[in-house]
Image (cartoon, rainbow, N blue to C red):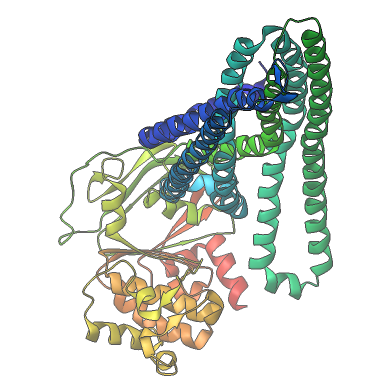
Length: 592
């Protein structure tokens, strides 16, 4: 068994397991589908009897005429309509049940993926394009549900039909049944060859589709930069290359899948001819004595080969669904953040002292290449700690470790003497308020953005925060004030989004603070105004400030100067300037 087939079978097993809550309605649907097939299989025998009832073959003429029993004809005609009607009704009900549960299953998958997004570690997003993840949530889930909807009923119906017709044919006439069965190996070879050639192409198709969506998402979110650097043509060429590759793969996969239908039709016509010849010869030598068997077998050939043809036609959908299934369950099986169970609250959040100690901390995104190397330091309660250094020195990584966005490679971090490893992530992140360099707003009102995930925020305090963050004037210009809905991110400038994130942190009023380039997107005058608010906010709180503008951290109680993952200098602004080292060099480069 090839690696590709093993991978697919593993994911199909996961699919069956995920589908278990729908086993009962699925079983009901299958039973109704089988009933529909049974009624269909009964029709050729009834057609045979109806043909014999109106056929002169084997009947004696009376006064030159053949007697027809119209009561018998009417009986078989009504029976035929009952079978056909019953088959139609049971098939419709089965389809309704099946489609309903598949749509619910699709909804469940999207819910699971949505929940999974919040359980994945940040390093997954560091290595995966957002557009590819979005493609899994939308295209792959929809493709999987469409494949299930179109192929499950076909596979079940075809399997039951093949078995039922197989039995019925041998009961009717075993010689003619053998003629029909002779076509089966040829059809199976056609189907298996198609699967073998096309399945890798369909798998690749879904992968490249994710890459195309990633390029589209990147082009959409980076429009300002693309236009500023006149890169439209290059981006169009990049998209065209990916899209052409997708088109080429899709064309090949559909072409291979499309060959199956004409091949099946050709074999079907040969089988019809073989049945008519065999039936004529058997009737001529007396092996069969009624013409109805031949007409019935013409229907049997159709019923026998139609399932194989349907499987062949559905092969493209099945293979596309298999590829989508692999991607969906690959995502759902990604390693999640470690389970914490019900960890007890270890600190009294109303009496946080704010002492933080780094003990021989080591960390690397790649365990073999450490970004932070044997970092140690102790921060006393209420201190304002500035972390500076060249780009890539490990400043943001350090605070990400403090928040447990990433787990330590070795060493430990203590908050008020308690290891962050022993604390739940929820408790730890409740202790810290964060203002990040990357601003983020949600689709909602300005109020919802500022009081994000908080309840019962005092209205007067909210007005004070708007004043302190210099947002009050902007709010006054909005049609519904603070309750104005922000339709999209572009409704706010970069600076305004930065102010919103600062206001969000001030509203949270956490015992400790982390500020990562908190004023990087605002002008100098606004920065001065906000700095007063920030000084008020950090007063009495242990705070970690990452800043490139060293003018904002001159009053810090302690400055860590980092380089290549190590602290190379420690002290206050004045002491570090007297030292004349890296800090002095960086500071002078900004003001000289």
